[in-house]
Amino acid sequence: MKIAFAKPAAPNTGSYVVGVHEDRKLTAAAAALDKRTRGMLAAALAASRFRGRKGETLDILSPRGVSARRVVLLGLGKPADLGSLRLQRIGGALLAHLNRVGESTATVAVDVLSDGTPALPVVAANLAYGARLRAYRFDRYRTSEKPDHKPSLRSLSFALEDANGARKLFAPLARIAEGVDLARDVVSEPPNVVYPESFAERCKALEGLGVEVEVLDEKQMAKLGMGALLGVAQGSARPPRMVVMQWRGAADPKAAPLAFCGKGVTFDTGGISLKPAPGMEDMKWDMAGAGAVLGLMAALAGRKARVNAVGVVGLVENMPDGNAQRPGDIVKAMSGRTIEVLNTDAEGRLVLADVCWYTQDRFKPRAMVDLATLTGAIIIALGHEFAGLFANDDELAARLEAAGRATGEKLWRMPLGDVFDRMIDSDAADVKNIASDRGAGSTIGAVFIQRFVNGVPWAHLDIAGMAWSKKDHAITPKGATAYGVRLLERLVARHYEEAGG
Image (cartoon, rainbow, N blue to C red; front, side, top):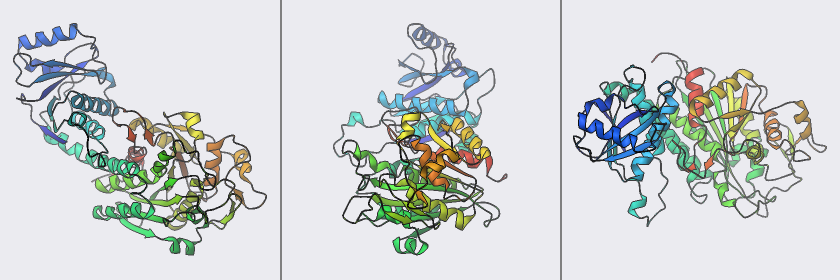
């Protein structure tokens, strides 16, 4: 779908989209229509249940005086509530509606949207951004889809006087959307297509954006002493990989970076602690944390962020063959700590133990955030509304929560503490990978990872409930959500990026 920005002009085809506030008050775009047409719009409003609530739509076909095929009344909600996220969601709702009715082209009249203040280019840019995010579709394996089931919209134009201003504001948002789409793609792919080696190849493609990419194989990881990560991988015919992606956008390319670490279990059977068969196909997205890191690095590099950032992803398959790790095995992590593996399905924390230690040891980051589809327990606690946030630094936690509210990728802070940490002391090794009972499962995973961050300001995001959606949302179609890309991009932009540029 093509997105464009242009000077106001009455469209001669497709749909003409006019905003309506929650009080059914037509916005200024309607003033450009003749008196009879405005009367028809008012009559249509009066005869409908349409109230102008955010994202509501009402189609009016071919009113006199309008050359477009239809006028679409678009609910904007209350003028005072039209922040960036609200506008993005309205843009996504509009995109979904236009596809639902089979429209091919549409023009949005960006006009006076609140209390006499002329529409800023940011309004058009955010409407377009929401539409761009909602337009994603993973359909590369569909070979016989009916035309009526395919998206119809080919072009969406936003009409306003300062079209150039809107275009400039949209450009970095489009780069973020590309990072989101990259993460959605890699998480959506089947596990016979995306596995550790092929995931690493997708990371290598970021070199075209100026990202430095290193791929470590199992021999290099063995030399580094990464027994925790390698233990997870040893049951698979697919060899593991660890990928290091560096973006040097700060004025001083040697300044300490922000670090982002991702769990990349490209398929998780549970290993010897085998998962139940129903629903196991969903475990192709057990690498959504790594997918988010990949998408974030693409977004930062794509918009030329003025920050140094490093993304490190540990890529493994967790399979149950004759060489697989057994419950009761003891492995040595890169940190030198020994780990008693009591459950091979608690494997993501083993991967992150080595990835986080390597990252803090090599890069000495300003702060480090890891993302992982780590526990089913976080879904029991928070459903599919919030990701779990665990942090050893209050300022970092507060910044992440604010970024979550701004982007709609919400976080809920969960507890850490010595009482939980003592629950993973092992009688046979330095630490065990699960507690003796099932209580506080998400926190147990977090305190395990915390033992390998070495005091660096750190946050762990348990995104198990947020990585995949079984229904459409305003700016996120069902399927892979790329949760974390927009959240962490916002964190960087608001708190760590250099001024200027």
